Length: 489
Image (cartoon, rainbow, N blue to C red; front, side, top):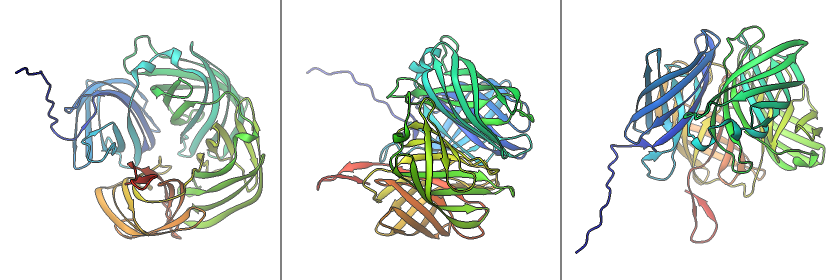
């Protein structure tokens, strides 16, 4: 009788899949806006090594390239990462992604607290180490950055650039809004570098531009996350590393490859539009709705808005748009202070508002079928103020009823695995209302279907709610039905 050798691996409990991870966090500490980014290696037994961290905020100097190591643990669907080093420490809590039904191994998660900062959100995601070189940053890119001015106003920038794979940015154009002061169509150039033989994908970049007649240099740290499967170029997360000043805001966000050129026909059909801004009273302004391209260069918009607790319906019946082919920059008419849009692909792009609320967000295509069933993973976007909740969890949609469990984080409290229950309605246009009757989120929200068991949700449309949030979510697990088709379980 012949026996064959085998290896038996016993996991001590829920764990991260072994490998390198990148993380990003955007939130608020007592001094104002705060952001962090970094990288670490995790094994499947709770050990973290080769960690690096960068942070920046309204108060305190930037922290750059801080070397750390540590541990992590996961219990009751919640994880804790503890990083320590000779020059500082970092601890954050996260909810692991539900990678597969009944799986105890996750490939990332949603950060719900960072160094005691509960008012914020972020992510942990696997990194592709084959992308860790200057040469993999090549081609055309679109970026979306947001943050704060030194005077605690909102700041944001969207734009595009070309990277040559050798460390030079060219053909840059961006729009920046700092508390209502708009710098439109600003031309810039720059440079970037990733150290040779990098093990963590960390690099630095500089953008040189002129804003309002004043030369400005913006310095950033970035981390390479992975490779875009269409362009074979690197996808990056960015964090400004300048001390915040009257001319240099705090900015963080992402930058990804895009197509070489666009036309007015790059927008077509029905799209979802969602934006979040900050009112002069310091409260969120959230808009969510359907943008319909009626013909090349023309659109309509029907949306719901909660601005400082005032609920309104947005109707633009005859708007126009024009795409600049080399840059994908889109100018729009219709409504007050029409935003600017930078395309990231066909029927997708980043939005920047041109008023004092400095709204940012995205448009993206809807796909058929527009249907809702099964269990969805849902979470809120980056906050614009400390009084917003930052939530992540699951919602299960039955026949006009919904149940679920959310990790709910506020500026003062964290409530894990909180059950919710309620009911919903759904119209033929894919717009629905969600009424939570049990749990912390009692009240009415509005949602729009993006596709099969994918949605965007404005919570809430209750008059007087001055802390609305914008959720997005999608099916955790699709299965092929014995009767044919695909079902969300």
